[in-house]
Image 1 (tube, rainbow, N blue to C red):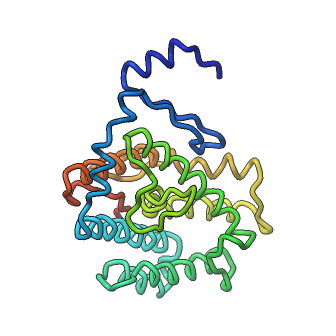
Image 2: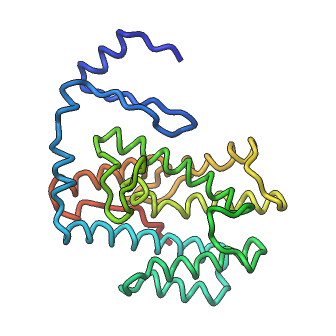
Length: 251
């Protein structure tokens, strides 16, 4: 694309940030000069009390676990382990995220025909497909974080490391099952060995346009991501976790 300087000036005057992406992932952010000194939102994030921060993270974990249980129920309703996962997802047990993940991946392993499957981003096959799908999800989360002025450097649970985006990793958690479902559908159409091909890339990005229930409506996942991030922004600014509404797949 060719962008004229008049567009850059016009965007700056209107307070619009321009996000430049490569392979879906933001690589540069152009901010108007007056907006770059607006630190209200950043101060609000840094000033979150441990109680509010924990409440926001707990809502995120609850949504992720419930969405994993919903997908497991959809793919393997007769598997008795699904009931165990549903019970874990609805519980208040400490560290339930890890327990749910273990059960969830065991169920998905069985439905793809690999009872020995373990989620490991360094392994090939199904894991490679998941990695690519999650990269697309992360990129879209980052785009919306930048768009609403949230700095992904400051997260809730994921550790801050050099060149990392902890807040994006946090807020993408409830949407991972959307990717998992899309990848699962690919495995049912094509036999292993599974590799990231051009056709797979075109297929997996489609999860962003699938419609899901949210706030008494049915919207595309992409729109739900934006709405969730905006609700998080409001919760941060007002210091009230109530306003944060992570997406939960309703039966």
